[in-house]
Image (cartoon, rainbow, N blue to C red; front, side, top):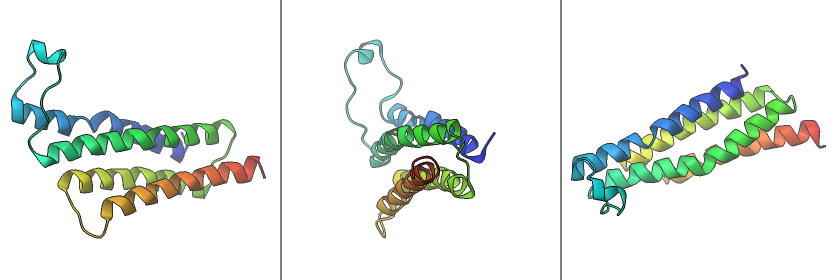
Length: 136
């Protein structure tokens, strides 16, 4: 398995687990769901960290599609370089740090924005490597 596919696998696991903090926060605030709450939505979580946990999960969902698509295309067309591998590693770890920073509520130095942007740049690096090898 290539480094890129391995980190796609790890990112998939991260995405699979990212909803758990939000659910734990909901249960802490409201207790387990009641039957009628499966039909009508519950109120908003009362703690900010619960809201941030949900936002961190949604944010990863938004970037995951691009990451998965790029890694799969790279594999299908035979592009696997040190740069694509490094970008995949960076993307995963940046997303882990982004989740921690987001849920913790760290608000200094525009950390979340900078981390998100760095992960986006990692996506562009993979895209560039594919284009450079197969288009140009």
